[in-house]
Structure formats: C-alpha cells, structure tokens
Image (cartoon, rainbow, N blue to C red; front, side):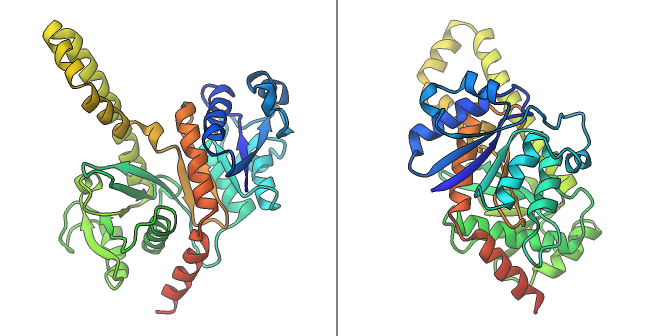
Length: 333
C-alpha cells in the first residue's frame, strides 16, 4: 500500500481539482494507495465527502505562490510543499504529488530528499503522444536544469531508459539525443559533447530531430532543460490550437461540417485524448532518491488522477535502484 502525500495548495484552481482527482483515482485503485492530504484542513474537508474524512490531513494554510522564488521554499517550513516533502523524507509517505510552484518542488525534492548517489542533477520528464498506436515518448529534461552540461544529459539518458523499462515495461529502450539533424556532426557544443559520451551505450540510437518525438521512432529523447521546456510549452500550445481550430472550423462551415463531425466523433475523441496534457498527469522528477510527480498548475481532476497513477506505479517500481546501478556502472567505464 503506497502512502501518497498530496500537496493540495498552490494550484491555479485551488483545492478542488486535487480533491476531485483523488476521488477519481481512489474509486479506480483504492487497494493501491492511501492519501495524506497536506493543506488547509477547512478547505479540504469542505471539498472532501465525509466517507473520506478518515484519511490523514496534515494542516497548514501556508503555500508557495507562483510569484515566490523557488529558493524561498527552503525558508517556508510551514508551507504545504515543504511539509509534504518532509513526510517523504521521513519515510511517512512513499511519494509526493504537487500542482503548486514547480521550481519550489524541484528545489525541495533535491535538497530535502536528495539525489540518488552518483547523480549530478535530477531531470524533469514527461510522456508525449505519438502517431503510432500504443506508443509514447519520454522527453527529459523539461526544465530542471536550464544551464546544462554534457554529463547531466548523459545521466538523463539512463534516467529515461530505466523509467521506461521499470515503470512502463518497455524493454530494449531506444534513446535519442535531440538535435537539429541526425548526423553526428550536427548540433551545438553541448549536444556534440553529449553525443561523444552516449555513442558507446548500446541503447543510444544517435541524434533525433523534433518530429521524432511524435513519430514513435524512439522511446526516450534527451535534451537540456531550456530546450525541453520550450518543446513542452510549444507542444501544449499546439495541442490547444488544434482543438480550437477544429472546433471553430466545424461551426463556421455550417450544417454539413457538423454532420461530418458527428460521423467522425470517435476519431475526434481519440485525437482529443491523445493530445490532452491531462492524459499525461504529471512530470516525474528523475534522479532524486524518491518519487515526486510535478503536475501543471492548471491541472484538472483527470490530470491529477493520472498523476496519482503515475506516482503509484513509479513508487512500486525498481526505477531508482536501477538508476543507481546504471549511473555507477557507467562511471567505472
């Protein structure tokens, strides 16, 4: 039974999506986890049906706002994310989920829980949809390190490989390095240096381009945090634009377009599900000696539900143990 510390404070839409997401997750997988709610007890109990009042609530009405700096989280020991992280640090919880200040969450996870021995920097990761049925791509780093070094990216390749293998069951994981061309000579100084480190690894398939994230040709795509964050935001923007353009086009084209849309309802629903960020749930922070899932500030209840499922599967896996082995074996080469 996984104990999951849920930081219910700090999200764009308040407590409601976190509580609603928990309820949806619990109805589907009640045998897999037990929540510890961290936040304002009055607000939590107002949203939480009475049958769930039996679960632990760690009260605090303090939280790190989006306008605060990430480093301020270290001083605010009464904040919800600090208290949630301490539960994990003290082994009272197996994982943490937060839709609050992502920088504060990453800072606290790194400094309070700590990195896996041998890891230089953690990396933020997320799953992206592809055009191949049942295939997804893990991309990292998405912003934990905006100023990266080649050895950070080198280690991130092992993070991604072990996560895909241990959590999602994908064997013979293929890892690519994001660049502006497939040839070894392409890229900037950082990617060229990283390529030299990765080319001896049997899981490395070489440079990949941005379109390869979505075509199902690779399982893991490694990049620096600055580039990765741009990829993430651009992808979210493109997904929103596609949905809006489709919706507007159907209404503008009149009755025949609406009839066509009805006939294509199944296909359109499938498209919407594929590009919906809520299907990904959250972003695992890989390389720390624990399990932390960082959700988008505007996460809805579906996103929180899926983030909870991610946390359960991650916490139940041997990902961190295998990252430790891989990183330390690679250091001996």
